[in-house]
Length: 177
Image 1 (cartoon, helix red, strand yellow):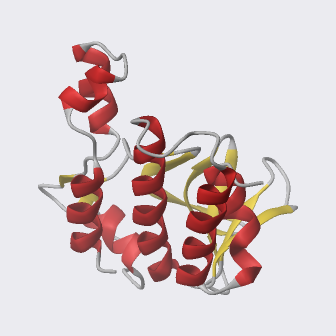
Image 2 (image 1 turned 45 degrees about the horizontal axis):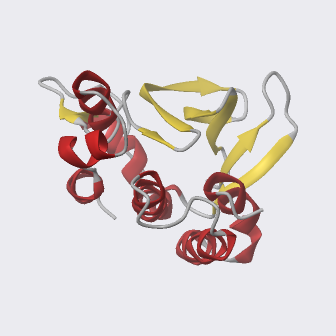
């Protein structure tokens, strides 16, 4: 998925202010929650070498408010020893490793917690699937405790990013484990 498509599709799965208020958020909380689905176009793109769609996203769009479950994207990627860190999963680095695979490393360690995607370009597709599922659970369209639905969404994400090697991450993210 191209960065521009991700921005559009993420915005499309965002709940409305009214929907968020129906589940108990006040207006300012609902506005803040909607912002976690919104990227703004940068007036001046970052000067980075763009070799995948996540870097394209972070180069041309301010994605620093994006939160999908426990995933939080950075406003700008950061080069670390293991590769290019593009965000966090809770407190743990979400990295495009030097060999191209996406990995979550344990904070302050080179220990791999989860393999996330075979290729960073596939990850944007999975983020939209995850955001859609988590939005529906947040709005009570899908029961928060429906583990089978979470497993099915996790499977869809894993297939999208490269197969069963990535299932554990999405099970954790979507509540299917």
